[in-house]
Length: 99
Image (cartoon, rainbow, N blue to C red; front, top):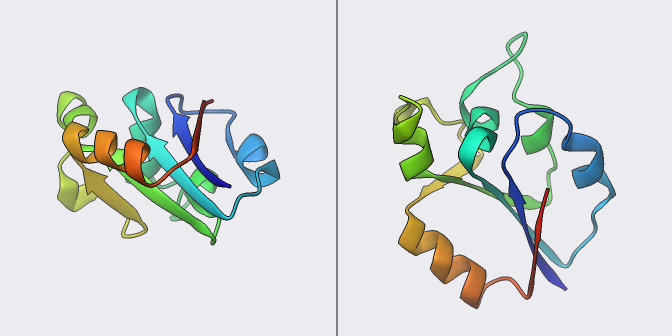
């Protein structure tokens, strides 16, 4: 199964993500979830984006709303527009969940 997961909060999602298994896993960082893509704690990336076998996406509109640019995003994370996100969710992932 190809699973797309929306993360909209800053805390409490890494344990749930660790338990998810999918043929293809895509993690969409939206709303306050974008902080996982831009903020480092003790010089380390957020635990949410440490899962090696996942694709990570951050919504550019949410970045801009919170005063960040694509240059500040962790290199593991792909910056996408709302239109890109719609295409990904409709064409790439079979199931979608929201954490």
